Structure formats: C-alpha cells, structure tokens
Length: 303
Length: 241
Image (cartoon, rainbow over all chains, first blue to last red; front, side):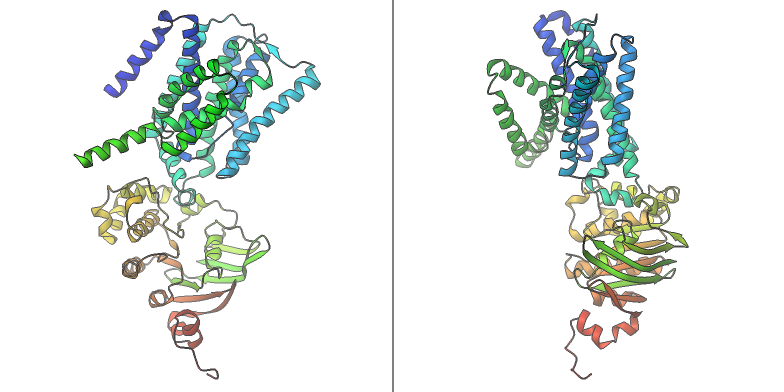
C-alpha cells in the first residue's frame, strides 16, 4: 500500500507546486516534468530490451510540429489525438522495418531517423509551403502545460509499473537477455518489440505536442535538436533504465545541472555534458539505484 | 519425422553447408559429428530458423519449416537449445524454466512438466530460486535443456551441449540426455565430443568442411577405422588398411 500512497501524495504535492514558485520556477518544473516523461517513456522500450534508441527527438519533434501545423485548424484535444496517432503510425512503420537490427546498427539507425524526419520536414516547408518556421499562439497557460505534462509523466510511470508485472514486461526482459533463446521459447519477438516501441513513441510524441506552445516559434532545427535524444538516454542510464523510478531519478538532477550549466556557461556546456556522459557510463553503468543496492549489499557483508 | 534435403547454407561467398541431406525418424537420437567449422551448427541453425538457407528443403511432419519464424517452431513442438547456454542470466532458475512453457501446447501441463524437469535435474529443484547467471556452466546447460523441455517438444535440437564444460560435468549432462531419450523424445544433437555422443545416438551423420561425408547406425560408425582416426583421435590407421 505504501508503494502506492507515497507516489500519489507526491503527485498531489507536485500538482500544487505552481502556487508556490515564480514564473522561472514554473519553467523549471515544466522542464523537469518533460524530461521525466521523456526518460521514462524511452526506458519503457529501451530499459529492458537494451535497444538504445536515439530517435526520441524524432517523435518529440513530430509532436511539436503537429501542434504547430494543426493548432489553428483543430481543437486542442483533437491535435493531441492526431499527434498520438501520427506518432503511433510512424513508430509502427519504422519498427516493422528496423526492429530486427541489433546493437550498434539500431543505435545508428535511430539517430538517422531523427535527422531524416527533420530533413523531410525542412524540405516540405521550403518547397511546398514556402516557409520555414511557424508560430504557435495558443491560449494555454504555463500552469496548464505543467499539469498536462505531470499527468503524462505519471501515466507513463503507471504504465511502466503495469508492464513490469505483465507478460509483456517479462517478454521484454527476456528479449534483453537473449533474443535467440526468447524466440525459441515461443515469444513473438517482432510483436513484443513493436508494442513497446509504439507505446513509447506515442508518449514521446504527446510530450512534444504538449510542450510545444512553450517554444512559441518552432522550426526543425529547434524541435529536432539531437541533444534532446542524448539527454534522455543519459538521464535514464544515470537513474537506472530498467527500474521503475530510475529514469525519473536521473532526469530531475541532470535537468537542473544542465539548466544551470547552460545559463552560466552557454558556450562550453556541451563539454560538461560529454564529460557527464562518460562519467555515467564508467562509474554507474547500471544506474544510481543499482549502485545503491550494490553498496548496501557490500555493507551487509562487512557487518 | 524431420527431412532435410539438399540444404545449402552460405554466408556471403563462404559456403558453410553444401547440399546436405539428413533424415530423422520419430523416437530416434541422431547425432551430427564434425570438427569446428565443419558446418554442423549451420545445419542445426537452418532447421531452427537461425540461418537462412540458400536452397534446399526442410520438412517436419510433411510441413515446410523454411520461412517459419522461431516462435512458431516452438508451437510446432520443435525446441532448440542454442550453442553456449541458452538461458536468461538475469532470471531465476524457476523463471527460466517457466518461460519455456510459453507455447500453447505447453501451458496446460506446465506444472507437471516442471516436476518432471526437476525430477530429471534434482539440482535445479534445490536451486530454483537462484539467479541463473550465477550458476556454473554445467548447471546453466541443465537450465537450458530444462527450459527446452518445458515447451513440451516432440523433437529436441541440441547444439554442442558439452561445449566448454569440464569432463565430469559433460558426463552429468549426457547422463541426463540418456534419461530424456528413454522417455521417447526425438533428439538431434550436434557435437564435437564424438565418443560420448556415439555411445548414446542411434544414427550418425559425419560432417567435414560443409559436406556430409558419411552416415550410418552409431554401432557401425563406431567401428569404422577412418572415423576412429578423424573423430575419436584413435591411433593412425596403417596406410594400406
């Protein structure tokens, strides 16, 4: 029961948080909630399967663009629905054709996918619509965006918890362990991977759509910034990608660190990001949560 | 039961298996013997859907197995234990075994099958809660075989179950195979350990550099001097023998 009560209390507390912070503080809350959502959604697919995807921003950016293109034509909720649908379709198409790639090939492909989508949209905007860059003027407050992102993040973590207990979660773990053996145990690899990939992509796309009004001005170079994909991976790895709370635990501190670095060292902050990336992989390959468990186990042995 | 005809498997230009044909009858234990790189695993891989053959036919009870995805094979009663410990290292022994019972044909009797597997490998019953990745090589091989048995198979494909195991552990694994065989399960085993395998098998195929160079009942193969020289490391036969 406490496992359920504490997160729910935390959620309620977070929902009231905007009443106690400045506009800048609210911006930080939105950013943190966004990255918690992105990292958790990324881990939903990649955490157990070990398929490292750098396509986060392909979906995130697509979501943002959906909002930019459709917000004047459709009501807000319909745009979200469209964004989710487009994200799901894209993930299904991409997944069907590529999920048999393994290891580094999948990493490179997913990185290429983000670039491909970005170039396609640029090409379309320049050659067909004759513009590059769009404005999003929506009558939506920063608080609303925060609450929506908080809800999406909470839903992602709840969904992950449910998947961990389901047959789907077991299948994902087993695929991460040994794909060949999993197949020979009778697991339909393509179906399991595709379901998880699509679920994760829908959340990533929705996150992009919800947060996009904050940008006001949107163009491919802004919303398809590959840094988003890299940050998502580091955050999830730092916390522990195969733990329920791992991605959230990694996302909050890293987001705050990067926020601080990018305001204080705007030119050199990518260097720190690179160093952090290396540090995480070297020192905490399984994430903070696994590190803490190891430390505890060692103490137990000593005492 | 299982028919392989004129099977050719190539990786790029390298032909791993050239025009090989084998036949397995129900209830038989068939061994495929050969040195490293002879093409044994390619043969088993093609049957198990891991290698895509260039040409040839694979039929199981009259049905073609080509282009059948691996998870469907399990539904048809074909269980493969891949080379090098086919287990899930992060899961417990019992979880590993229970995962073997995913195919529909295995679900109903899973609890009884589990008891049978524990009966076959008492060590696994003692260690059912242990994380499989922390076990010894031989124990992991038992988990892998147990997992394959959990799918309630008609035919068991084993790829070098003795690979990298200490001789005493090899003995243990093979004695388990003897007991499995006694239950009437059809077995195809690929091995380098010719001596132990010959003692168990009914029928043997010899594979050398991608070709099947000989076949026959195990008794006959055992007493064939050239086989003794090539596969059993026996004394060199006289030149004019």
